[in-house]
Image 1 (cartoon, rainbow, N blue to C red):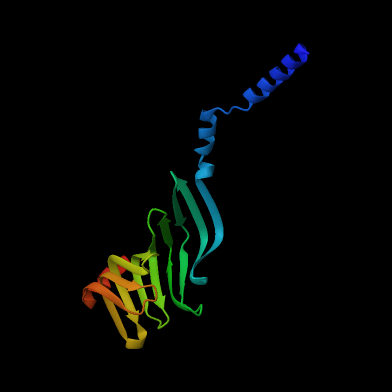
Image 2 (cartoon, rainbow, N blue to C red):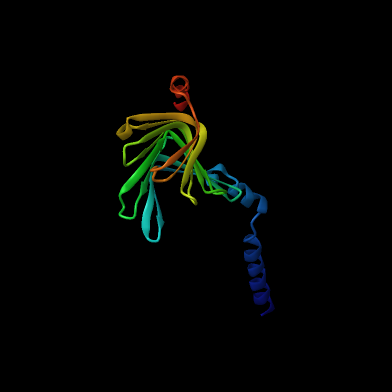
Length: 188
């Protein structure tokens, strides 16, 4: 009986001791770059509020990085953002060649060949815009060109602020047309 009890205890001890993980190995696995980055292709992200879709983000590539519980979404191949009204109609849309968002704040920064349109066919062009998801504000301190075909007007300046619908806007520092045409290269 003692031999059987000793054999069972020995087997149990070996089983329990073999289940111990080396913490250095576990940490090395978790720090592996494959766990820090996810890549998705042909992405469509829906933002909703009160059971209604408010924003749709389309992108050919999404790279998601997770570094110390801070998630960063990068759209290296561009992005198209559609803002919708209560009836699910598109009120404005924003496109750029690059975008980035960090979970630390609620802002999406779009850069490179930025264009922002509204339903009145107005068009803003800039090198960078920032969209605050919480406030719905879209702004920049960079050079902007705003074309309004219905008014037969084009405005130039530095600094811009509007809402997601892009119906009313403010330009902080208007720029004269002749010098603005030279600065227009900054938009691209």
